[in-house]
Every structure is written in C-alpha cells, then in structure tokens.
Length: 429
Image 1 (tube, rainbow, N blue to C red):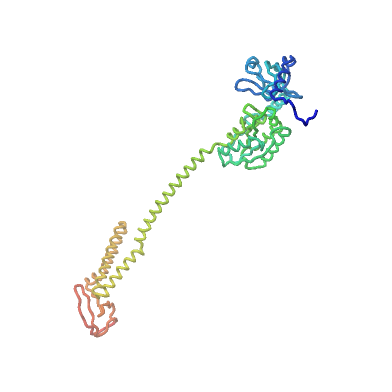
Image 2: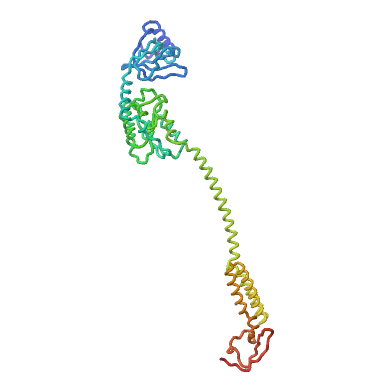
C-alpha cells in the first residue's frame, strides 16, 4: 500500500466516535462495573450534576453522577476520598471521550493524598499554627505590599487591577514563583525569603488562580506553611476557587477566597476618598484665591490712604502753601510777613486743637497747657504786654541794637500801630 496516493475513503470524526460507541455498547463487559479509585477534581454544577476524575497510580477516568442518581447516594464526592463507584462505561460523542456514568458511590477508605494531608493538618493544629490568637490583623493603610504568584497566571493581573482601582498610590513588589508542579513549594518559599529582606514591607499576598484540586498541592506543603508563619508581616492567601482550602490558607493571618478578594481585603478602597479630597482641594484653592484677591484690594486701598496721609504728602502740601505765602511776602512786604505769621499761627492752632481732640484726658490737659504757653509767646501777646518790634527799612526784624546804625530809618511795631523813627544814637550794652 502506498501512502503517497492519499486516502480513498476517509472517516469523519463523528463517524469514528459512533463506531466507538457502538463497539462499547455491543458487549456487556462495560455495563455493570464496580471501580475503585481516588476522587480528584470534584465539581458539582448548578443543576446538581457531579463530575470528577477517578484515578489510581496507573491512570484516571472521568466520571459523571447525574442529579437524579445523586439524590439516592448518601455520599457527597470530595477530593482525596477513596471510593467504590458503580456504573457503566460510555463514550461521550461531544469529545469522543470515555467516561463512567455512575449510579452509586461508596466510601472505600481515605486516599493516600487525603491521608497525608489530614496527618499534616493534625500535626500543625497541635503545634498551634492554626490558632486564631496567633494571627495578626492586616494593616489599615498599607503603602507597600509584596505579592507572591506566577508571572504567567491571571492572579497577578487581577491583583494589579484591584489595587489600581482601590488605591493607586499603593506600591506592589512582585516576587514571582512557580505555583504548580514539582518544586513549586520551594519557589514560593524562596519568594517569601526575598520579601522578608525588605524592611518597610507592610504585608504579603500569596495567590494562585483557580484550577483542579490536584494542582494546589504546592500549598499543602509543611515547609511552606511554617515559612508563612515565620513572616514578620501579616500574610493573606488567595489560592484557587472559593471552595478550595489549603494548608497555606489555614496558617495564613487572613484567608481570601480568590486572588482578587485577597487584594480587596488588603487594600482599603480609597477611590472615594481621593475624589472627595480633590473636591475639597478645589474648594480650598478657590477660597484662597478669593481671599487673596480681596485682601489685595484692601491693601491697595489702605496704601493709597496712607500715601495721602503720609508725612511726605502733608509736608509737600505745606511746602506748597509756604512757597505761595513767601511769594506774597516778596510781593507785599512786611505786612504780608505779619499776615503769614498769623496764618501759620492759625494753622498751628487748628492742628493743635485736632491733636488735642485725639488725645486722652491726661495728654489733652498737657497739650492745652503747652498751647497756652505757645500763645503767650506769640508776637501779638508779647506786644500787648508793652513790648515792641523794631523793623529795619527793608522790613527785616532787628532783635539787637548792633543791627542798627545812626541815621538809619526804622519802624517800631507796637500793639496798636507803627512808629517811623530815625536812629540818633546806638548804645550796645
């Protein structure tokens, strides 16, 4: 037969599956069987149908216990149970896979894996590793969290997504590990050893996504359980499905049903706080800007008023008045000078009265006394007391006899008038 010519009549997949079904059903050899083995990967659907793999050291075979038969079976299949099952072999057309359709399940004894796990649980329980009083609470506001899981699994992505949504300021330190297969427990321990070297770590998440119960064996390891207990910070586990409970879950400070729930338990939800904080900050900034603008306007008004009342401004106005008065004096002569003195005295009197009005009683009395002394020394009051003022021909005041010469014309200013005189003699004493 030559293989290069190609098949003349190929068989379809469905046809081959039908031939297998017909072959199995053609004999009674597979119709009334009792099979012994260990249950693995037990799963019950929402309709009540139970599926699991029955295995031994040589191989495994899928089994199905439909809800109608399960109602008459007092035993609920669990992973690790060693059982006797009764049923018949059939070929499922959808996948051309052989399976045993069951009508009875009886307990035959504990499987080896189950027995080893129960013995380890008993030993760790007696050592106090499951005690609730030994376990530590999770930090209320963690800033840095270590994560031990597979880099290729969905658990790491789920944890990142949850943490980013709840509090993006939290730092995640990833410690990759193998979470399934030979040597997986050792890699998880090594990852925990690495995280233990970080001083400011707040807590650790040990996680693995869902899968068959047989794939969770790494988390039933005694060395891993004791390493979790020795961690200096709280450890939260999220391994497998919600119904899976491993030894690592039992010794952890907090156990979560899934990796996502572990992230939710460890990281408080700050998203609402961040939104509220941003709104408060915006309101505060608006109020600060409004307050600064208002105070700036007030400061400008005060500065303008101070500038108008400053000594420099008042002195400038007085200087202008003085310049104008001296200009009149230059034009009008001695009479304008006396008028200037009177104007200055009147201005001084008004200023004194205003100042006295602003002072307290004691200062007001002192100011009034000083005002009276000032008035007593005024030129007019001096003239009233019998004194006179001698003015030279140019109108300047002569306060000394040495300032006059014999034959010089002068004026004498008295209380009620003026005298024109000619100096006959000058005697200096």
